[in-house]
Image 1 (tube, rainbow, N blue to C red):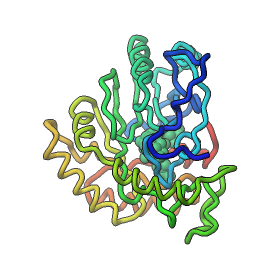
Image 2: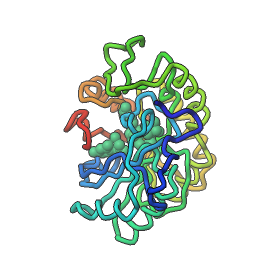
Image 3: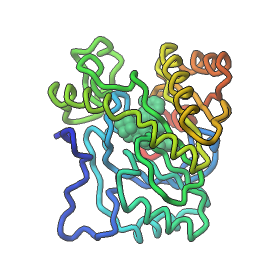
Image 4: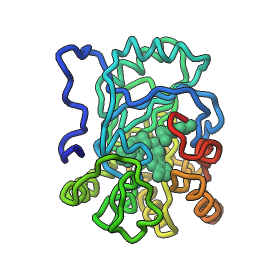
Length: 282
Ligand SMILES: C[S@@+](CC[C@H](N)C(=O)[O-])C[C@H]1O[C@@H](n2cnc3c(N)ncnc32)[C@H](O)[C@@H]1O
Ligand SMILES: Nc1nc2[nH]cc(C(=O)O)c2c(=O)[nH]1
Ligand code: SF4
Ligand SMILES: [Mg+2]
């Protein structure tokens, strides 16, 4: 069943769950596909559970239908060390909803890993983060009955033919409607964004669905620049095409690249999708 509003989906630990543990959806070795470190071999740690519900979420099984096994931080560190890599990417779901993410980050810092945290920018935590890869969520990410999660068979939706069924269950219309409100209320927290930008080396990575997203990006940057005490150069602003398949990116990437050129922002590919399409664990 989908996680109701107010829950991240990972609250229920069993008695045997280690106290210092994370709900791990997957851990894999791949090339960083997004952002300024695209192409760098990295170990990815994907925690489960999210405080938002983007309709397009490419990690449906960490948000709409969270699945995971609880693993101690010790075990996660040991599994990372089993790969020959000096870069780690902590992602999710939303990794910063979990207290134990800070323990993991402390451990990786002591071992001298370069760690990128992929976050939606609604939560600030004080932790050793080498690159905060912040992806604030625009209005076009909000799920609605007409724009239900992309992991679900949207046979009633306008783009039904384009939506793949990847889940064996789907959120009810009521659950989607409840998340419309909660997602819209929570998706932007200017204080959290400003503190992240001030504290960490940060890239702002916006998922672009169409041209109308650019007005919101420009407004948000103006507000954030007014609030933050450190500068936010356009070079730290990256536009990323929405799409979980090579075919979807083929349709969108040139338009998004052109928008980056027009506005003086950077463009980031989704290298893993270009290389491996929608394969799991890449
Ligand atoms: C699954 S999220 C996990 C981290 C965090 N919750 C966040 O949203 O930044 C990882 C990255 O994938 C991006 N993403 C998710 N679904 C996408 C899609 N359909 N197309 C393009 N980017 C997507 C997010 O914006 C984020 O940059
Ligand atoms: N190769 C690869 N690069 C990525 N960069 C960010 C990812 C994410 O899901 O957060 C991701 C991912 O899932 N795979
Ligand atoms: S914030 Fe990230 S993990 Fe959460 S639903 Fe959106 S893309 Fe998925
Ligand atoms: Mg991904």
